[in-house]
Length: 83
Image (cartoon, helix red, strand yellow):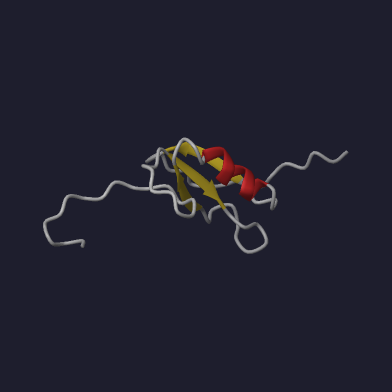
């Protein structure tokens, strides 16, 4: 429990049922709801970094992956690849 003298628990991966240590920030936002300045963050271990990024990108959510602890101020819109 927090506050009872226990050592701080290291951050863990946000993938369901994964208990691995996080090494990455998966920064994202839902552009239908929020502007570029609203950044949501999922944490990812090495094994789930691409899975979480691809999961969000498949839904057309802008995503920027950074090393754990490196923050971003904005997540820009996804650039369209349509001609």
